[in-house]
Amino acid sequence: MTSGILRIGLVGCGAIAELGHATALRSLSQDCAVVAVVDPMAKRRDLLGSLLSVPVSGRFRDVSELLSRGPEIDLAVVALPPAHTVSVVTQLLQAGLRVLSEKPLAGEAAAARAVGRGVPESRLGVIHNYRYRSDILRAKALLAQGMIGAPRFLRLERPDTDHFPGRGIDPEWRRKTGPNAGCLLDNAYHWVYLAEELANAPTRAVTARLSAPGNGMANDLALLTLDHSNGALTSIQSAWCAVASSPVLEVHGDTGSLRMTGDCGTCIVTTPTSDTDNSETDTEPSEPAYTAMYRDVLVSVRASRPFGASVGECADVLSVIEAAVLSAAQGRTVVIDRCNASRATGDS
Image (cartoon, rainbow, N blue to C red; front, side, top):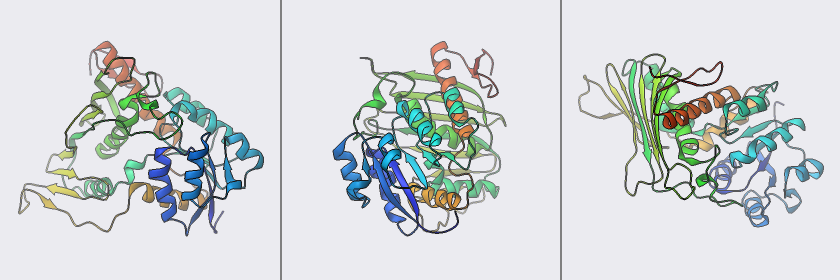
């Protein structure tokens, strides 16, 4: 596959499909076209179908309909709650399609690895869209230049007033109990992979505290400390219970500090030699993370190269999430053994 418009099939027409995927795909219409949408709710698939100019004949209730009588597609994008992702991704892979899945690919690391077992990385990728945020990209470039020396302490703290509201058949799935819900899996997941990328080191151990509002609801407060293999430490705070708060996204090195201001924002560097306490770096024009992510994915798919985050990267993040759950339950630090299962220890 080397040229031409790439044909996309969008499976799942909820809020993130509407606000993230559809917006990005429409902006890249010179490179791709959505030719099919799939959702059990007629009003949702019709809404996304209209937004993406998908004919009525390309709107399907489920994946079986898509595969039996749908158009040919070059890439299937799965934007479903994680409880439904494994079965749908497996069905699409068995049909021989390339699949790009929203994170997480599964609710547990072992399940994610099972889905990807034997599947080439050029056929299955996972969306880690925060790595395409303009401020994160700039921070990585500055870190690579040694602007603040070796990272020692990261603060990735983003309390919110509530969860990202769903618009599909189960809009409150994020709040339900179980391994596939809660702010730990939904929000802190992003900060875990960013912490490892910014610190340039995997997580060695996790200490965590989780809190839930009761009434059978999932955790809405997650506090994590990650101990990286190179000695750096990360503080992660995710919450759906903060009435008024401001995010703190910082990397502190042994010769300076970086502060990130948000997607399509900037990265501010402070060093002992700065003329001012906070000298804002020059930034090139930026685009939303989903658009930047899709631009990269489309190039890779066209070249038959791996795209998105790998299944292994997704499973590694899920291993940290599982360790955090265990740490909170036992009140102990949990050491990550990525070759096997996480194991609890009293020493970090």
